[in-house]
Amino acid sequence: MAQRDRSWVEDPGSVDDWRPVKRRLLRWRLVRISAGLLPLCLVTTVLYAWLAATSGQELFWIGPALGLPALATAVVGVRRGFRMIDSPEPAQTGPYWVLLLSGVLALLGLVLPGYLYA
Image (cartoon, rainbow, N blue to C red):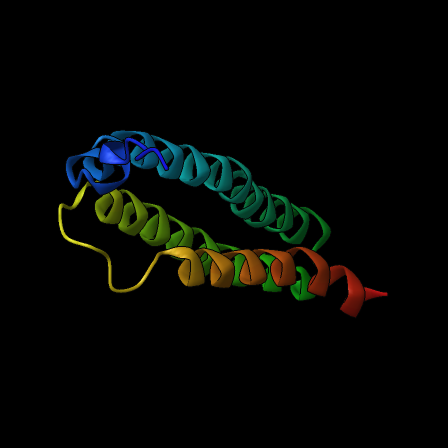
């Protein structure tokens, strides 16, 4: 029976060759998430602030009250994600729970005022 060349499996240096690719993919994922989340937070805040200011309905101020914390948590999550990707040591927690919280706040700020008004 012939021996196969398995040096590519046992080489510990081959794992480090994929680290830049993995970082690039994680950065791309974070950019895609933030490209949708940050405008959602901004639209929620600006749209309902404009509606509340022009219509005189105090109920619409719920949108900016939820949109601004959503924007702040989105910025914190994106910064934490880029810091996690650029750090040499393995991450303990990811930024995705902060980004999820930001998305939930933004969606609540977008949906809740219209639902309560109706």
